[in-house]
Length: 222
Image (cartoon, rainbow, N blue to C red; front, side, top):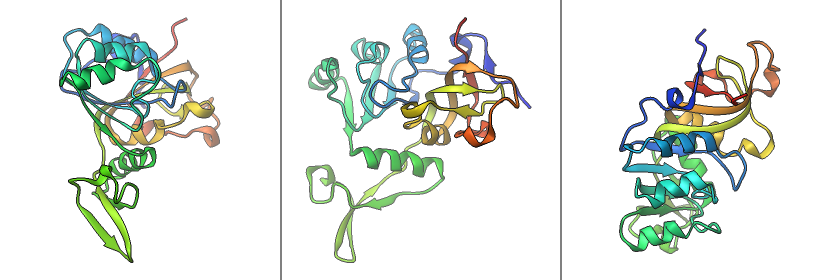
């Protein structure tokens, strides 16, 4: 079995190029892959990025720095108005950033559908509101629905608590958030972890994301 451990952040981010679509894990301040985002910020020639993230940065400095220096062209999120992220509003008003906003449940279900290999699906959330304008809608059993598209990405940047070298992941509490579905819906999943333990050391009952969905691991520097 392949050891997926990377020696440094540069190795973990190899192949991340301009135009990439990237899932960024995190819910509020929990589970943010801060080292991977900082590494991406250091790759100054990588731009025109699409970032898919629940809280649109949640005040994470590298995420917002990527937006501020014009290297993000599109954000897909459920909540773009976290305290301290006025740079997103400024970029939208300047016409240099597109933001797609949707309910949180719709966001996670679109990602889940992408990871499960599903096609579009209908959701009642947002029907009859401005969020449904210009969208395909249907009525089933007297209830209105909006057609939603699956979300997939080139890369997923995820944070987990523990991993073995094969890439089996254990999360710590709210750190789990969007990680499992993002891992499934990305072409390549890159995970930063607090600790890498020997193969066989993880209790199988605690593994949430199996190694099948993980491609690279970045351990915590000692």
